[in-house]
Amino acid sequence: MAYRVAVVGATGAVGREMLKTLVERNFPVSEVAALASGRSAGTEVSYGDKRVLKVQNLETFDFTGWDIGLFSPGASVSAIHAPRAAAQGCIVIDNTSQFRMDPDIPLVVPEVNPHHLRQFAKRGIVANPNCSTIQMVVALKPLHDAFGIKRVVVSTYQSTSGAGKEGMDELFNHTKSSFVHEQSPPQQFTKEIAFNCIPHIDKFMDDGSTKEEWKMVVETKKILDPAIAVHATCVRVPVFIGHGEAVNVEFANPVTAGEARAALRDAPGIEVVDVREDGGYITQLECQGEDAVYVSRIRKDPTVQHGLSFWCVSDNLRKGAALNAVQIAETMIAMGMLAKQAA
Image 1 (cartoon, helix red, strand yellow):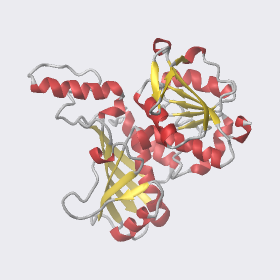
Image 2 (cartoon, one colour):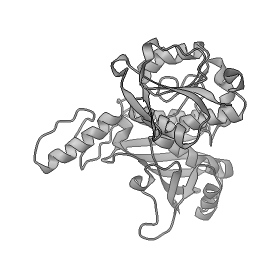
Image 3 (spheres, one colour):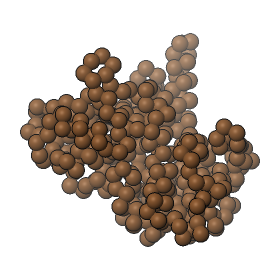
Image 4 (cartoon, one colour):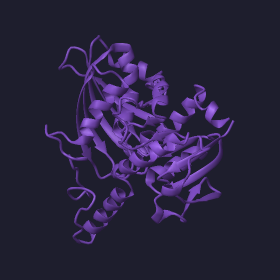
């Protein structure tokens, strides 16, 4: 059985990655539509090596008869068009922040909580988590199952692609300007990003945390376990693609680094590269274009009774966005949730 798939926000970095991922994973597509705003209508985007798609106007597009909508157009646009698509019978998998904390909409990472997909019928929408949350909960899931997680403290090192193409362009332009001694004032970030780290992603909240940090807290609780305490510090770094995270975990039960390493190696979606020598770990540059969450530097934290620390990296445009959305669709097919819509 093949499916009609509409990719919304197809001209953006994540939308293009969604189209690429559909091809690479041989997703059973009978027809695909590339949708974006009216100003992008008529332009073309690549779909595989030999096909291009003409972009259609989202505002006038009729989702009737379409099976799956992969949405990444921005939260305010999804707020309008995702419910419209769902009302027309198209199952929406939304990559924006718009629906993540809606109690009637499941927030899903297929390796972690596929059972939550059973809730999608309430609204016809499934939410894709924040990119930084996705890679962390993939790594935490097997550890929580085996040893019981009480508390997580995470510091992120997030690439500029998390702010879209404009963020990547700003890193390029700031870097170029620094070499020719020109001034290039920041537009996408609050300070110059070239050769710099900015401890500020998204808006500040009343308690001093940023919204990105808040997302990691509440999304981890919704996806994995509401009893887990989470504290996050999110930092934008001068990297084009790939997020890094230094994760410290306190467990309810005893655990050794070797036991954690074994649990992670057996878990889906994870690659353990953890050799205690120069270069025996994976960096953001090395994870680009890869599907896995890579875990390295697993070691004991002696400052708490049952504690470990590790480093993890993942391509935020793939597993942190496009791939996770496509995997949700694949999981729904495997669970028999799309048979009626595609009949």
